[in-house]
Image 1 (cartoon, rainbow, N blue to C red):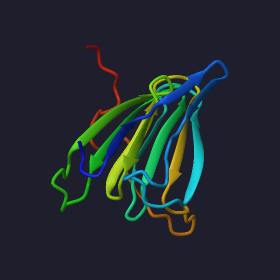
Image 2 (image 1 turned 30 degrees about the vertical axis):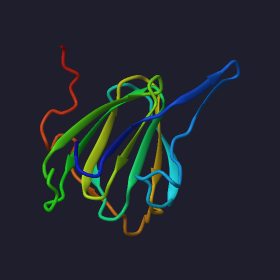
Image 3 (image 1 turned 180 degrees about the horizontal axis):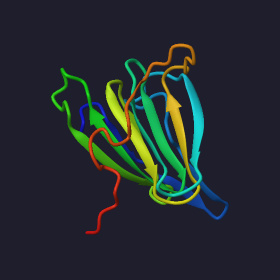
Image 4 (image 1 turned 180 degrees about the vertical axis):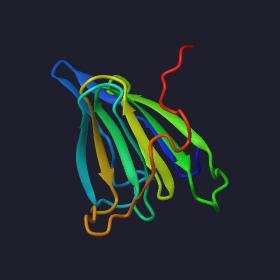
Length: 149
């Protein structure tokens, strides 16, 4: 696993009314601070949103509806996991949280139609001077194909 990245399996508290899932708490060891929260939806399966990294900002990702494939690449030269690649499959049926530190390229692809992601950021997005470096989705080769096993 890329140093600093956390994949946290979450627990759904279910009863006859429905369910409740705690996504992120201020006292979680992988939480730094709150900047903003937003919802991102992909209309159709196979939609890719990738790649970018941040210099300061932490991201926390949670799939609230549907399923997605996340790909992370460590671009921190001083990291012991420099150039390592992690892949995660996240689904609303198996609730999980992905914590992504600064310096790690990340992106995701919806595996189902109408997939929704809740994204929490440690900083407020600055539209005039965004804290992000963007590169094409295929920079690291074909990491998005779903391959038969």
